[in-house]
Length: 350
Image (cartoon, rainbow, N blue to C red; front, side, top):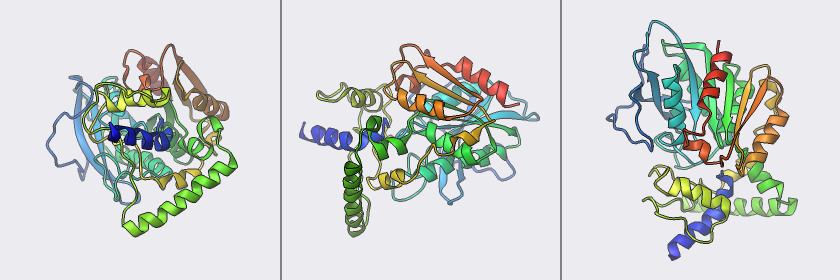
């Protein structure tokens, strides 16, 4: 019980930011093809693990999904799918990637640098710049597959990766359309606090403490990593958690979405980078490429999506899912508007 309380204390301090093939030179992962996802495998797609590098030389791991029986002499539209912040490709991102492959797209769901099965040391680092770059690295990979039309590549970002997808699209013109689901602007939440409640004095205190932590990390030879979700799925939500943390516990710590590689929090000093790196500052420059914002009617993160929608220029669209909470758009296939996603990308990846 004491350890559980310690985990919860750390999570409450850190996790408000959690919510927050075929080629000339194939680069497939060598490990055996085993199904390690939190969702059932579809018989309508072909799945393979693939690896490729981003521009920093970090080796990324992704699951690629292709429609069964595709004519490889023809070129498909393609989608890069990012994970919820702190999640891995075997969870919600894989659900989106597999389902969109069922609908005729070539897709990849990837683990961000330093996390999941992707490379990078130290482990569990979080970086707004590198996580945004990882979307462009996915475009690099997909756009060099002989069965992909490199002029028809889009991106889907879930939770924190929604903002990373938008950030990548602000400069990467190869991303022709973007959809976000339950979007979190992690830079805003970390810099300004929940619902922009952080004062300037509180921010200065936070940054001072993070500066002190950097000295400790340097002396220890490794960054401080808070305790994360339990290694084995929990059976219930601990008493005393606030509603937001209870929601994340329900998904990440319980059988619904638990995965052993989904640690949750990141190394503490990464928050300095997010404080200094706005994700939405050039969102208007995605136009005239379209953006589809999807959010739950009851999502605690709703204000972040609404504000991003307000900042973006046309063409843009908002879909509000009745009754859905933030995490419901991770995995509730009965709630996720896949018909609208298919229509959006079919219309805009021409």
